[in-house]
Amino acid sequence: MEDTVKSVLCDKMWRKGPDSVCVIRFRKDGTGDFFCFRELCVFIGSVFEWKLLEGSTPLDRAMDSENNSSAELHVQLTLTKRRAGQDSGRDPINEDYVMDEAFLPKNYTIRLEKGRFSVTDGYTSSYGLRLLFDKSPAPPPELWKQRRAAAENLGFHELLDYYGDNLS
Image 1 (tube, rainbow, N blue to C red):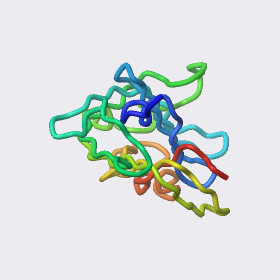
Image 2: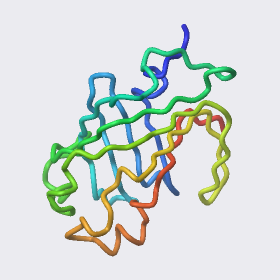
Image 3: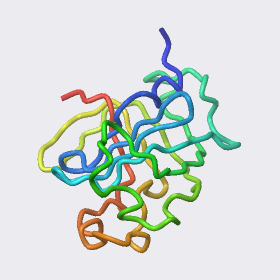
């Protein structure tokens, strides 16, 4: 079966940071999950909504390792206050840490690439896929109302590249 832009983008856990401090997953139904965490403290565990904007590479375009190894996507992404994953609803998360402005729609340009990417985050790993955002999907420090110093020190807002398909 031939890979398409949509099959490469969706239903994968894209990871970034030492110990994967940010994880994003796009679903084919226009939703997804976004997590920012460190060890056992989850700051953001949000379901998001996404849609493709005009000027993007078509999602049904074939994507292989030679001729069509990249795609440029213009995406509107909206974090929601809905908790992602198996969260019990008891611990502070999402709107407990960030202001309401963090949940407004934002536009991104994302480059989706197939290849071999070596990443050093304490140790070296190789990945077959990379997502490169023009700006971080994590809220910037000025939108944090609690744990702002922790979020700033962990650099969630600086993370632009996410990796999938671990080859190590």
